[in-house]
Image 1 (cartoon, one colour):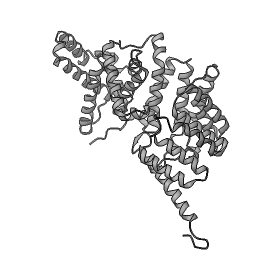
Image 2 (tube, rainbow, N blue to C red):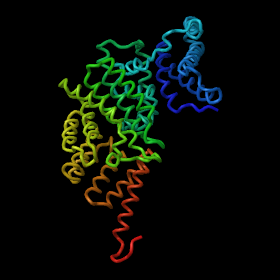
Image 3 (cartoon, rainbow, N blue to C red):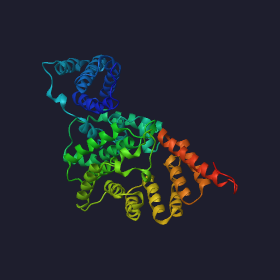
Image 4 (cartoon, rainbow, N blue to C red):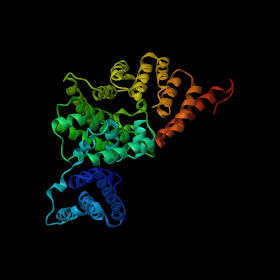
Length: 423
């Protein structure tokens, strides 16, 4: 029995979806057809082997599902013959369409980010349809309940269906309107791939690699857009640390403890070059600032060589541009590294009343780290415990539990009476 590569179906899904939507112009039905094709592949390929061209195999199955779908709908009977004839031409070897090898993923990204949708709905729909994220994972990224996100995605699908959006690369004006949403989708997909919000693995390489690939596509399309370059630079400068973030048993290794010899210098060089070129254009955006912060980390030979005052200054600029509580959280860390843990803890208080992040494990984990820096091991231990209970990522949970155990051991050692031998 042949094993299907874990990332293969996820990588192919958006490409197949783009092709089917281009042919039939029905987003919801196309998504269902692609899901059927993926299920068929999961059932058949382990026994029969992965086909020579798995993408085309999935496309053909999905097209057949679409033909069956249209044939079964009473309201579409008048169009049935035309659709069936078109599908037959597409499926026949003699009439194989050369466009089957076209990757429509980027076009589908822009279509999902149509201005008829709100920005949040466009991003959510694209993450679900193309990013391969579950509704729960998207809700986690948006810091909202899963039911809220499910409703948002359903409304977005209905809006796409009603809009009659043509499946084609948008004009320059349309592209400018949709670009912000497209970039944010890629950013969220990369983040979920770099640090998975749930499950047994810290990283999902299929997601982060696909985000980088698509960011490169957008950069080729818009080579002079500084935020596109900034986003690609941010991804590369962050992804460069990927190999050093995970130990031999899949455990999380924090930045300060990473073996920097494992960092990908080629990615760092490419990211720095992109960032330098973008910054030379004059305009500075949020992705460029985040890339600059990543570059400062990457250029430090040792953790103690990190230029924290520069990172703090960059976060202060970023705070003026963004209402993201995670920026406030990271700014507090940088402030603690420059001015001491008390300063960082004071800054964290602003997040205690922010409903978007009060229940997030990272707020507790950061507070625990700063409390430990301040010498309050007991309070730090309590915060680590709460953080461990709130995360759904097993590697993160294991790391946080290990911090609790470490602080407990330190407390036990310090309580041994003077003169008593320590084992």
